[in-house]
Length: 624
Image 1 (cartoon, helix red, strand yellow):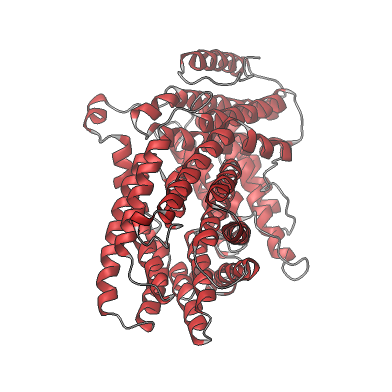
Image 2 (cartoon, helix red, strand yellow; image 1 turned 180 degrees about the vertical axis):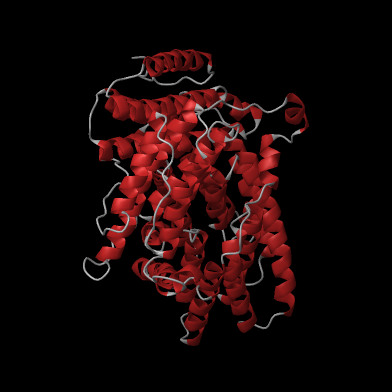
């Protein structure tokens, strides 16, 4: 599979990456089930609290439901337990710590304490998406607990926070979705995710030998990643549901050798027979409809990759309907690997930058809060809370985040000011909170739109809590936070910049090396081989995403990641070659000289690209 290059004229006419990212929005169908959950989350919680005269409890619960709603993304029902629950627990801890710190610490001590929390939360955020969401909620809740004037004790606020997030999680687990209504209620998204893997295998088989093979292989990796995440939630009950769950896991496991054979076929540049993709497509239909596969058309057996494809289809036909699952969907991540992510170059750089931004915003907010010339500044916690979202690279390049946050806040504040002038209180504001909650799942497709919706929701909560309209203050705090993050985000840091990219590359290189070593060792443990192959491709996809994000920064920051994209491409070609080598070993029992030559060439090319890259990388042990 060859790499593709963008024509020079197209590159010349393209917008700067940081601006293009700010204008780009995700596409897809409206997630009506998530919209329903959003409408039933913050608004009803706030209404119930008003009816029992515990408005402050309702405000905290609604904030927690709002933050959980931001994490309520498409995926399996069971995976949402971790995706929503872990960040909620972190937020409750942050609210507890922040409340007692705000009550008992002076301005200087509070600033130092919250800076330390920012350092820890930033390092943890480098582990992955769920950890990043947990770090975000930890810091936002810390700021709210320290600054929001509420009558309850810290532990009571933490319980209200858990109740709000728990309510949205309960809705996620209990309410049916369109896909669940048509089949087994226990599964929501898992079947579609596994079926999409078989469709991606078929697409790659159709593209083998053509110019789109590389893109189809990347799409297959993405489908496998999504299915792996969808199956990674808590296991269902051991008895009544165990058979259906094991069967779904078996169907995922059966896709792995098919993906391996399709990748080997694409690497060889061989065009499969037209019927080669028919079998995987029938398997995809069987997964979606929870039905039997029926007879599967056999592909030609004229080459090792085609013979491997035929064998994989035969095994799938034998095991597809059995309730014999496996844990091949589980990522083999050790505690040592997680600690390396937190304390490695990426975690250190990320943690230091988050700590500096968060601490600086707390210090500025405290100075303004205690300055007599500034006037009333009751919402000083808005400044550090806003900074948290701005400093998180999950949401895009730095300048893109700042532009979207500023535009979204101004738009949201103006929209709310118009509503506040005509809506009755509190019922009209509660309805506005419910409407904002319903819009949030759609608004998460663009950071500026998400910011506008969140701004309306937060300002409505403030007014329901008995405070005056604060649109102007919200705009001022956001613009100040943007300035702080822009300044700190471009400051030089100790050590080499681009720590996140270096860390992702090092993990991907280690995973590729482990996979290569296993294949060349001649081991017959195919389950271990498929697991190592999955980890190699997944870590490469994560490294590619980190590089793309770094390349979209302003030139002073983007230059630290120059040349790393070529390294990822070479690593991907090396893993593709390793896969082809594994398939040939299964077929002939020996390593083909062509595979040996290509592996050696790629190792040499990788060493040269590492030297040419402007970012210093750890030694990648792939030359042997």
